[in-house]
Image (cartoon, rainbow, N blue to C red; front, top):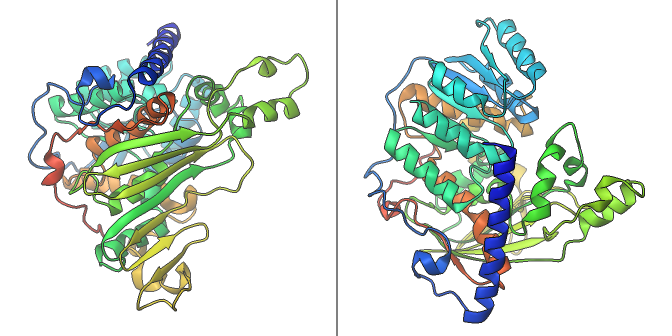
Length: 461
């Protein structure tokens, strides 16, 4: 995929959203359950039914991995994988040859053979997928490459794993689903926040019925990324571009992943529709004026991303979810992490809970008071191994679980339908914002199988 083609595609997409906004003003509210032509995106695909059972691959003693994109997050995953039993890193791909060489040295130091390096071009991952005998291709590239890497892997007989978000558009979501089903391969989105200690404790408590029937969740990605977006040694090389052309909830999965698991999304419930609105765009403009001198190229840039996006999701079973995105303003970090049921609730930042009959009336309990009793089994058994890994250890646990499930031939904790449903929030929110906060219906990527797929189990070590 060339940069020119990518920009052309992005331009067409922006023009389409603008046309959709004009049409929306003329015809009023979009009716839920409408056909694909009216919706403007694919609610369904003619690819047959989803499988009756969750996909699992034959067990493998050793997971042979090719890694694509070894910048900051990619390097962190490589460090984790080299510490996990049953992993062999066979190939590494990055557009920066020095990064490839660094990872090759790490692998040699870990006692494994030198992995083959790929760094000829942005699409050299295709050659890697074609030439290497691998079980899994793992990508931590900029967002626009996530689906191309996963698709190239699956078409060449490899399972795929990608950093978040798995996809940017609805079409990309369907492409992941269709390719995974056609080639019978895993396509997993590596959502590390599903493995945070407090999130897993809450999931454990939900499974034990402590909160009663789950009715509502609140979550988000609230992170001051102004400096990151202008860091030309890292994500500033590409992430700021999304703020120039897109207005919506661009990074929903960190907060939404754990809430979706507590609500059994795709396993007894599903996202039904979404409404979204954005505040004015001011944060990056002010940051540029306060940071860069007159005449700098940064001062010529234009941004459209609303500083605070608020999206609301209604599920098929009537539950409600608040999802916020806030990356352009000064603020402390938060994912909100609120799960509420008929008997109580948990809320993060700071982590606290209230359960009727257990907590003092009308008062919060701190997480530390209940952690020993309700800590997730995975943290009890593997938490010590995760010490020192990224994001408080959750990065290690997500990599550990991926390898364990592949080696034992188990369904993965998240599958391609989860990757698609959570990633779809981005385009749906953009469309809703552009059309005066009209409701946007979620595609059913499981094609009805969400009603019968089993709930996610409490995984042990």
